[in-house]
Image (cartoon, rainbow, N blue to C red):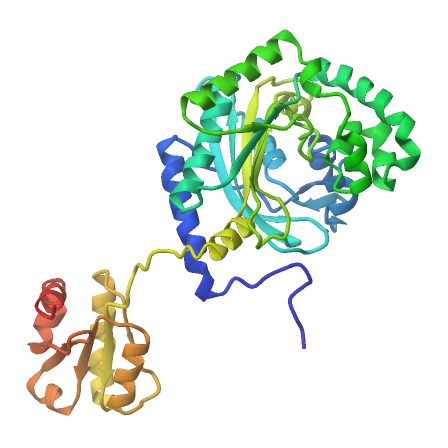
Length: 432
């Protein structure tokens, strides 16, 4: 039997309501902050990610789905959302004077990474992400973090821990890179295989290693905060000051570096220790990536950037663990009970007319006896049952029943068709 590929999931109708709840809630909050949706292709040029994300990152070296298309082009399924948004920003000249500054966008959609499937992370996973272009002040950093905080609060998650750090500017990172290599080199033989490889390619990634031996070694590593320039120090102080002004609690982790090369200055993660994941887990992460627009535009456009991404599967798994369910909405307004073929012929156009008026209506399509049709209506939690049988056809009427209270009334078919909104309201009110 053909099965879904390893590391993918079927999102069934029974769980889609929670997805819609998160997406709709996020859209509402994003609108308040004046972010607008952008949609980019699921596949892009391999070079976009090798240049944008970093050739030495695990994402590019180990995890990307890469293939050659029929035109001989090297293509990658997108492993993250920022680089495609930056590419679209540059290609469509959204930095032009006619566009609002800062330029704020968000995206929702699937990403792809070939890694070991685990709780809350699949090989096809989904992200909600935001990007801000052209806001270089620390206030943009904090406003964007505050928006993430608002989204989590709105869906019922209030116990995430906000962790922040600063990676400084390019010069800061170069100075720190040298100091870190000098510190780690004496321990080279004790490092994990991946960390030995990273030591001279991308030593900051050693700080993010999950290997226990590596963790013990980096405990006493120099802190990047000691290598910040005066400008970067001042910016980070502002970030802390603004977070405190908004009453958003945070902790500083000088070893946090994030997994992508384009970050600098402020970075952050929102983490949970909920047992559903089995370990401390990041649900949302991001930061400043000033320099990425310049890199991908070959130096033609120099605009700052700040953003974050939420792992949707992780968020929904956390909501499930906390028994947070989407509010029940959009009930089945009416279920059509028909007795005989002639009744079905009358019911079909009536159903369509009610649907076109904005009501949800369904019916039994198996020709079952009325008792079973009523059971089906109850199973689907319909509010009303509209019955058309031999007696109703003779008198050109239909019987409308409130299935919660059993209160019922008879209405002419033409009145039901032309005035259903009032009949629906009356039946629900009078049936209470």
